[in-house]
Image 1 (cartoon, rainbow, N blue to C red):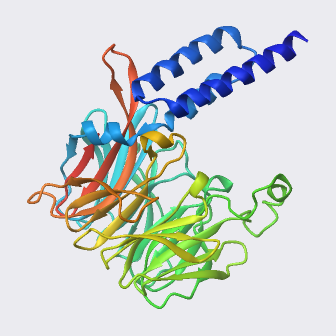
Image 2 (cartoon, helix red, strand yellow; image 1 turned 135 degrees about the vertical axis):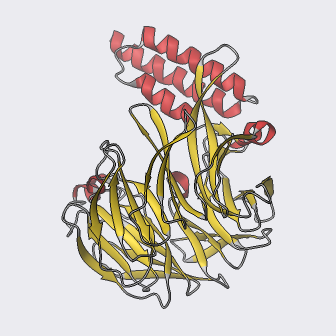
Length: 414
């Protein structure tokens, strides 16, 4: 009975806690109440396993866009690349915050964000490096995957400074790559200038399937969060397919001006989005409450949001004056909509990063301008969480935006 009353009391007060967060006017208030609850619950509700972690995770998703907009500034620059930085990725290893990057200078570089220095560089590609990803298949083994105009996909061990394996099969440049969010990242998807998409088994280095349908180069690739299997019964079936990817799809953006969706298990194309008037440079799946959307950026200078279920365009965002190379869903929220991320951003060859409110196609929220001479255009974007100390010298995590530029510098705003 006592345990029951504890549960009821806890649920009531936790609901009140969430309501307070959702109605707070200031980020500082939110942080104070979260820290108070964590301390209180650790003492009074130790029987709830990992509850403190749940609260921390809930809190970590709350990044107020107004705070970022009012205080953001350039906080770091990495120089070393001598040409376009086409791609960046971010991960943590042994509490070290690392960025990897790929460039037209044919190199893959690794940067220690905390110490502001380059810690590794690979020059095994014979042409431009167009995409880089920390390998989710190799997990904590310090491995990067890169794709290149030399038609290959390569894996690098940046801890031991060596190349691990090469995937060959594409007949032209390999643009985007993406690891599967299922089966521990065992599968890799790639898009190419040969107009195809390939699915690879990373463990065996074999090409499992070639997706044909695009009429021109496939520049952008993404793999969905779990979509069609959203209930428990279906999730039990998730390992029945050929590679255990039931419910997962691929979206691809192409120089044929279309975005296409492919079912991973059946390998069938089941949707095509038309509306962009020029090459599609970036196409991304949403998550959480935006799980049924795709965000895209194009050489037609527009950013567009699509509804997967209806197959229709939801919003179009105009404002860029040159090609849009990169688009990202952000974890930022507008002050009065805590818990619902509603800010997207885009990077363009016009040397700007623009933030938009997805609820209005006319609501441009903020612009970050790159260095006109040193950057000469924004090509890729990545949101990263970095440590900082607050006024009381406590460590907290802030959301920062990292971008790669046409001329080589990689910069972090926060």
